[in-house]
Amino acid sequence: MTLSFVALGLDHRHIYGMTKNMLEIGADCLGYWTDGSPETLAGFTKRFPHLKRFTALEDALATQCDLALISAIPSDRAALAVQAMRQGMDVMTDKPGCTTQAQLTEIKTCVEETGQIWSINFSERFEVPAVTRATELVASGAIGQVIHTVGLGPHRLNRSTRPKWFFERNKYGGILTDIASHQIDQFLHFTSSDTATVTHAFIANYANPSDPGLQDFGEFSLRSAKASGYVRVDWYTPDALPTWGDGRLTILGTDGYIELRKYVDVGGSAGTDHLVLVNETTCEKIDASDAGLPYFERLAFDIEHRTETAMTQRHCFTVMELALKAQELAQKTAS
Image (tube, rainbow, N blue to C red; front, side, top):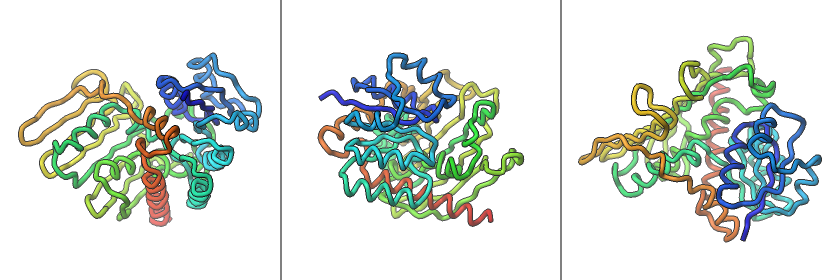
């Protein structure tokens, strides 16, 4: 089976990696549709000049392909996903997959009624080889039982390239709904937790008072029956850093710990995907750049066989439920 897909909405650069990785596993892109001419369009057509552009969304939906990739404005993603699933397509959406509880409820209803897959590409796990290697180490018992994670998601603001919607709270969903969904995904994944409770949440706009809709700092804490965790996200990455953000994850186990320096190792080794492993017998930094990205092949397998090897549907729903709850709690605290 050759999996076919279309791209719907190009408003976030994550569509580049989503499309690239599906093409690399042998999937066939039938074309793309986007509303207007977002800033990301030029980058997409430069990377994929052979792809057809559909002039109307209805034409893209009528292709009867297997999968829709969605990276539209965050507040528009849920409606596009529902339309695609109602047309018999499975969905891989950029994070956040939705921006309100009402949208999430609509998606759940659609999945139940259609049997389609709604998957969020949590790129800070699924497009980072170091996380693949950390998953293997945790599964092998290298650090014992995981009882805590610290997820840090700093980002560069890049104000001059940001579209208007980026600064509108109702469009992007809030900093915890948006960025921090990555860290929730990783907490649940590495602690083997089915769900969790948000015990603290806070948001602020410290450095951008002229953009009242922007939240440039956020933090929250999680607790499950198995573990606890802390998340901090922000838009403060300085220009001197050679990449968009010094994303890190620390996984604490009863017999050791793993630290991931995903995108840069300041003052240390060159490149990306640095993994530090410390346990009773090992204390080393590992180059994990060759660990692979199994999510995309697994999703293709799930689409063909109706399985859940890439990510369970329950996990995907739970991540967004917790992100929306954290955002709601933080909004109440801030008001």
